[in-house]
Amino acid sequence: MEVNGDWTSYYHKDNDGSIGTCSVVNCNACYPMSVISSAFTAPHGVFAADVDSDLDLDVLSTSLHSGDIALHDNDGALHDSDGAESFTDSSLATAGYPMRVVASDMDGDGDVDAVYADFTNFFGDGTFAVLENDGAQTFTKHEIDTSAGGASSAYAIDADGDGDNDFFAAAMDADLLALYVNEGYGKNAYVDFTRIDIAAGSEAVPSDVMPTDIDGDGDIDCVIAADSGGRRPRRASGDPRSQ
Ligand SMILES: [Ca+2]
Ligand SMILES: [Ca+2]
Ligand SMILES: [Ca+2]
Ligand SMILES: [Ca+2]
Image (cartoon, rainbow, N blue to C red; front, side, top):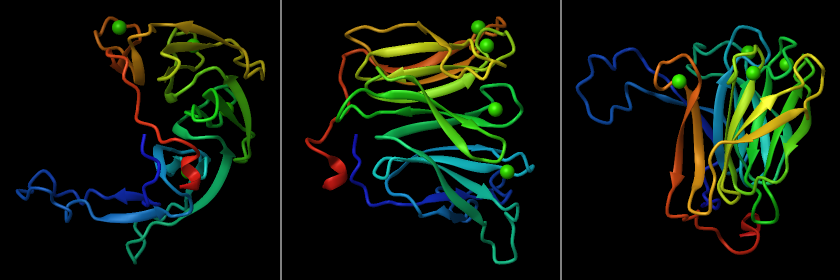
């Protein structure tokens, strides 16, 4: 994992609607780019959702160097006369090396919470955590599993069809691919998740998971990325944030 990049911004690439008729390869004109935020260093993960329920899409992000899980609140003026979007940045929480964040209402109270995967295995075990939204975009961290070294992916979905949102997760160093079944729905009990290991082993290094009904039989399967040779990401020695 390379964390020393000097790219420091999240961008929005706008589809101008001409892509269907465009004959130009690598057409930047079809997707003009605007900066959403340059507030955090080493951006890694992004997820779009209407976090504050004001009917416009906001952006959640993770940044490896600063460790921030952040909200970029859309002011709803995506097409201002100057062509620039306007987003307000706020850090919702900090972690070691957060790689993935997804938005989902995990407690069923109608507001949008978040789940993130914190890699953190430079210095200790990785973590999966829920950020609870109080309804006014103040978030409280609830660590769900702190023994997930190399946590790199999480994706929330109602996997068992019981009406609450669970989440699938992958952690490379822990060889962990798991479903965390939500047991605390409606009870304000975020730490009440039951972990079900799906597949893990010394020769598998799962790095990403995407739940979906891939075979169309009505239940939720998952698509994964894993290195069957047991190879892990290249890691620098020491603290990469100081390099
Ligand atoms: Ca919004
Ligand atoms: Ca909620
Ligand atoms: Ca469920
Ligand atoms: Ca299925």
